[in-house]
Image (cartoon, rainbow, N blue to C red; front, side, top):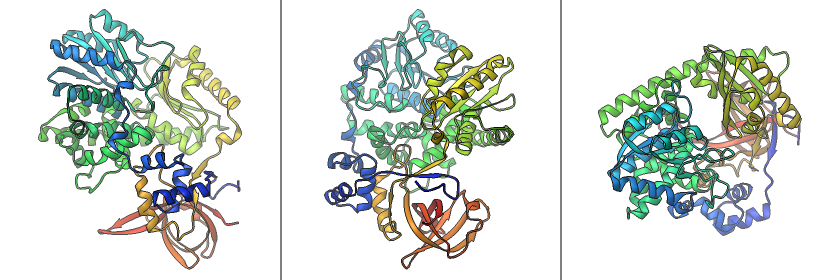
Length: 573
């Protein structure tokens, strides 16, 4: 490995068997650049590569393989036949809201009497509040369905049982030591699960469960997919699920359905996000435009507004609700920018950067601490906890991690110092009493220092393969787009192009961005370097460098132009 790049990062290449890549490319009749990508991403045989390149509804796994599938279906169809009221409990993020919307819409299509609910972040917190159990009982519900939550809600599910209701849990979060006492716990992460792919989202679990019920009731698969893939794809992408296996099928098939959705709420959401006239949608549109608007109302206000949006069939009501989401997103940005600036200042004021960053404040909005934690990880390369201190002095918030540091395991090791917490390897939530905050901060940092190697704290950028300027051109870009949708688990390809000459630089209105022109073997290529403009300070025309690039198509005044996006650079040699 060479030294660090101009932005202080280490470059890590994917090992690719070039002969295998060439053979696969010949078998698939694709350029060798595509063959290199497929082999590098684990699709080295013809069958898996063809499945990846050509996702199809037939690749969706059998819903009947989900744990407790039969018990869940029996409970749902039994409630339908008896005419019993059904309570649907989701969550306040995109995955939880789309889960609740999909399940509610599907059950109503079966003529069920449904009471949907998503929790208020401030009043109820994450998961199932005991008050929700009381509300369900007051409404006369007999079946209590959860989506995107419930797998560790032992007390709440016991309360459901004691209230005379039947509980069915659908969730995708990591399991605790034991399962809640529900008649069915549909979670692909269960140890005895025969389901082939565990990394589906909460809405993915609901989507597959309902698909199985639809199959049993004789609803045409094509009609089912057209009706619900728009909701499934939003939750899958926004919850940052890996876009591989079944998630790739849901996303690839779901994006066109989302674009042409007949749901008034979805169309209104596309309109306020300025996507209603788009020819096509990408996973990036969900991650950066649609998802944040749904999440925002749950962060700074009431997620039920987002649920109402996805359930309404009235275009006028839908547009008003979508505007409310848009306004919430602007407010979220304001809270986020303020908290982020303060958090960065606090970290930079620390005498030494700890192995784990823990920052807290009374003034930070609880709804944005997760986003701020992610931004701090990007800037400082450390696992980070960002906590908002409440009136009782307790520090509650979110954590984001780096590769190699499992947040949930770290939290479990510190149960004696916290009020509560849980999550995944890379994202978690925690609640710490004020008197234990210093001890928790020091202990979790010591744990990271003891378990992580110094290399873990290096900023790294991965690239997929090497290419020449000629190879990484418009024709390759067209072929590589067959690997869309790109996102988590299937990122946009990054290419290492060695020994190019800097033949032009042009400033932009923002100093963090710079336009450059690069040359190699008589060819020239325009490129943009976003966010790393300062790294070109001191560079001179004629300098030779290695570059990491993505291929892109820019549009200006209706004209499209192929270009590179420079991810990083270093001197050649």
